[in-house]
Image 1 (cartoon, rainbow, N blue to C red):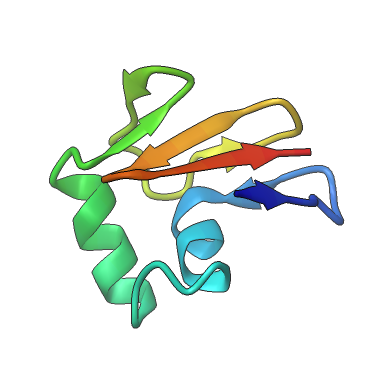
Image 2: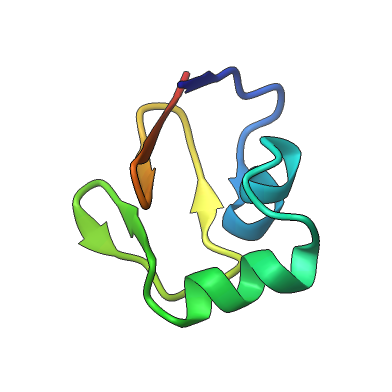
Length: 67
């Protein structure tokens, strides 16, 4: 799945919500906080991590390419 970035960055939990991978921002924050999200191959625990062009986000069996 590809996500086209419209600004300089998007916060990780907002990206998950925008792509409808979760039902709410709170659920997105829990998913990240529990260690279920990878950024560029490494577990990302910062809910507000700034996701930029070129980042690869993995959540369960979904891979998101930020471009």
